[in-house]
Image 1 (tube, rainbow, N blue to C red):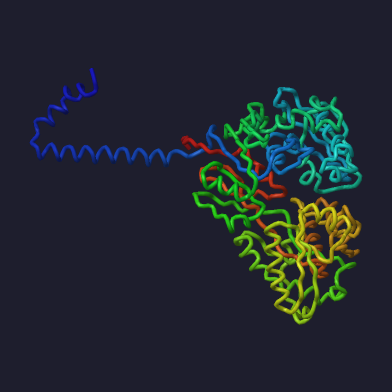
Image 2: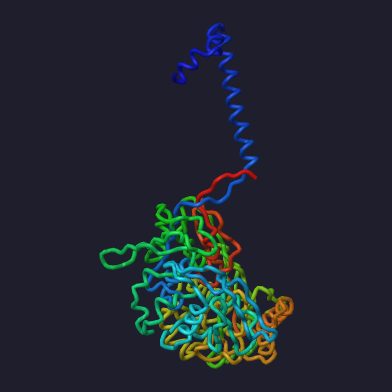
Length: 531
């Protein structure tokens, strides 16, 4: 019997049929109200008694400027390599079940979690970690991590335990090193000569132990990679990621990437700062995530070549006071940056009065890397200084020239440049007097014995409260000496579609791939479950 026949033969139908026309209309209205009320109540009850949670499934399309060349955390060539490596490989800190530190702070014992597997099914062991470190430390490998791990020794304790021995205590070995030491598989590379590793077929089909596996990539007729597809790893030791497919799409520049987002071709796009958005607005629905950046920009003064007037502290202070940081942040970064008056946020704007008349007739030459946001910054700084009578010459150079001709030879009077301090905010590499010459990074050739002593104590002290007090003192002392004109710390700007959930907006960005810190927790699909 069909549902229609059932209704016709039911007693309710007979009763309704016996009613007058007006009574039938009234009955029908009441029935509709009852049904609507029941559905509404049921929906509200369901909403109250249940909660939305992440569900498995779906795809997320990430747009990236550049090309993947060799996807390996030891030899990253491009930002695209680093981004994909972050999803494919696991760091020592992630793989650790426990981390024990000796009393003298020089020995770090790492116990690995049980059952961690490479994507090809092989077991990850302490031998993989030791192999990774030794490859980094091999000069022939030319790994960008080489300098970070000099003086570090890794010793095998057991199949799942490795011991790192440092030459001196370093309080930030976990945050600055173990978090960034991503393990590569010994069983795939140990028989390959170092010089040939970058020729390996695993360059675009890497085997890692992270949350995602590379399954395919597409290239155009010129061999340019246009897309790379990753799928959630069923072997991932922290549990399968929520999103099934993570697809990377590659673009020539920020303008092309923004256009692709506006056309709905990608769901996420990361930018080192908000500057690209000033001329290329996002026109479709999106969420903007301002992630704290562990970098700052300043105009560093080379005391050996700078005009003799800059040897006067009052002149340097006048230069700093004349800079309109708020305007730079508004016009260049759409407000998405933090003004700085020292190498950290702990230093506030000085209340000391400056003498802008000291800038009258001052002739200044400023070198700037050819990055749009730095060029715009320099133009505003020039306007500020010229308004007080200074003459300013801007020398805008490509990044390659900056590295080979300017920094290598210390051939600058003043240079606009950035430093990345990492999560620890360890300033040793940038302000200790022992780091004054290339390839070290004390670009202001700064020397202060009090600061040297504090910098050494800061990186060895295990107590976070004492370190914070030391860092504030270091930052304030450097700022008061004005070896550089500190400008700002821009937020890393990440644009995503509104449907993305699970992103940790408190993530601090050291390098661009840090936006994927908790990518296994991201989701694009949800389901409701009872509380």
